[in-house]
Length: 418
Image (cartoon, rainbow, N blue to C red; front, top):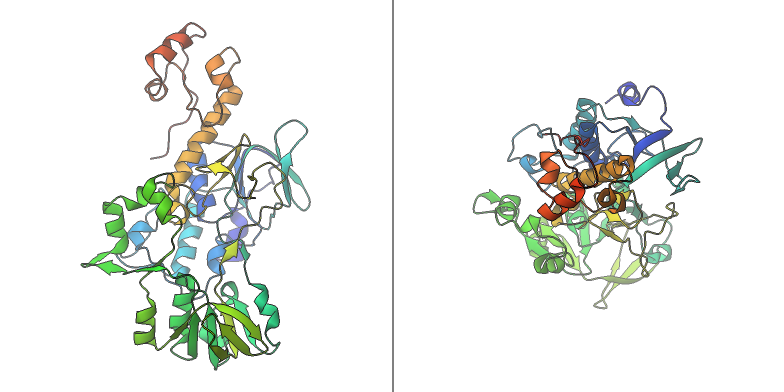
């Protein structure tokens, strides 16, 4: 997409007062934008980068998803191409650009939120570099890929050793043609090691062992089986979900296959380094010329000045709904299910959050005489007489109590997008 097209998508005039402000124009931010557009909300999507889908643009060029196209779409727009084929990084970027244009989402690029706090009138205040936006509600959709994590061990390596985090790796020709150590035994580390093995002598350092799963089973993609078995629907609160959420899995890769098919030597965890020598957990050592740190990311919410953490500094929420009224998160790893951070399943949490947003806005507009609505927290379903969708969720007892307090009236809550 050209810069002119990206600029054309931004609002003609900056909006400083909205019902909902969304932070992040990646897959999660676009998904919630779809539902907010369907509700007719006054909202804006802010992103600090100059283009949407910045997290995808920072990945290596040859990246291919391990979810087929049929499982890689956001709500309302199928992913083009062979539904059983696997989309590339470039295809995902084009798809997300098209998605924003199709639904005319109000995106403001180059708009980094420096601070999120309560304003003097009790609403939420977002401080940008040159202006402040006030919103009734805020959704943080910055995703799990925020701050690249590199251990302090990096400082012990010699200055002439080529080093980069996986976020800075693009293609093999940028890495010196010599012995390369890839550190990190997740899907990223394995995929980069495979690609480099065609032109480099590669060693992969694996810390915690992960469960390898085949990409295809009996002629079907792994995610077809996971969907049919409803494993992707298991919540983090379920017994199986709690077990799975603490275990990472390798999809389409294994240490044995890496050695046999690609000639990559697999070593245990790196424990120390000095100049060009790296020492592993088993006591062995290796001279390296280049190191790629596939060591993941860490969240950074230092800019949020609200009570969102527990005593262990972990984000406190229930399916993205925080204890701060009107503040939500979307796209987190295991936010609710295994699919919460995956492009094809983020829509489920987005729909849930959109419903909570509608409930909150409805409660603000509801007359105080409706005691049930006025006292209801953000997570409580709205209950208005005169709407079939609302009354079907309320008990007969509640309906009788409500009828004595207020006249029947139509629900102002917009219908969900199809």
